[in-house]
Length: 416
Image (cartoon, rainbow, N blue to C red):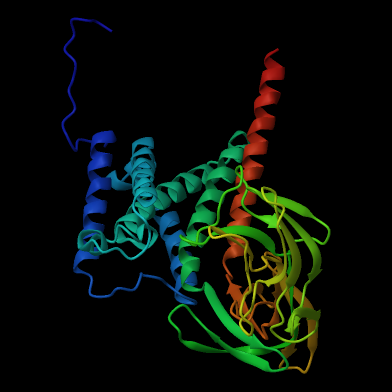
């Protein structure tokens, strides 16, 4: 090219649109979305539920095919299939995700944040509009490669089509996602759940809690400052596991655990092992003051909702106390009662859900005031019918990446 030849400068909005126009359009979509957030009369996020989301997906894909097949020479379709449109939308989505990481996604006391919806980015109109632009780019590019199919582009098609499917299913599936909780009491069937808005929902099956089980760690000993009520540190350690026969040293005191009862009740001057509701752990300890060799013997207990705790004052400054036992794990032995008369037995544990007719049933919580004597188990039920499509999209992306890696190695070997 002749250096003296004058360079032709392209005017703004002149065909083809480049990065400047693409960012103008993207920022315009974000501003439009923020205006919709401010002037929207509804506080609920915009969602589509079945069957409207299915109709929308089918219509959207057909519209993309029609747009590419018969309007491929139009300015906007040509722009949507080019790199600047994709890069600008990805950049702006990343920017909004960064805002989501900076601003807590919870109700805020700042009216500006609330009005602009910056504390609910994933349901914000600005995010939805710019994501819709990105999905349109992704869909048109995928259709272009499918209609111009070559085996060399197979990995590209899998990657882009999989991402389109995963993102679209994730967006449209929010309207069909159900997340419910239900309180189940021992020896009593329960079939009324509640959603996030405290609305009652009748389930097509019932839960029957046969037994709620909690495994606890042994309680711990601690030295408490009598003046402040705080736990005193002892060379970087302040809690010691209660086990019979163990000896610990707190400052100038030697503490020996003579006896430990996981469930006990005081009878006169001593504790006796019992198996009653609310019976707390108790330990008999011997405390020796190393400086003057004085010795104290006493029972201490962590207490419970039914019985008070007991501590031992070993000096004017300190007392020995027993902490409330920490929960090791908890589970529910339940039956699922179906309308057909079936009785399905399972044991629910935390992070080990049970699947039943599209529902994932989780062990959520219990009555923490009652502790291991709780006769209440709180279960969580989650149903996401669009989740298989999301998984299919993810597996397509993985398969596309593997295929492209394999093809890359094959090309390299052929060159060698």
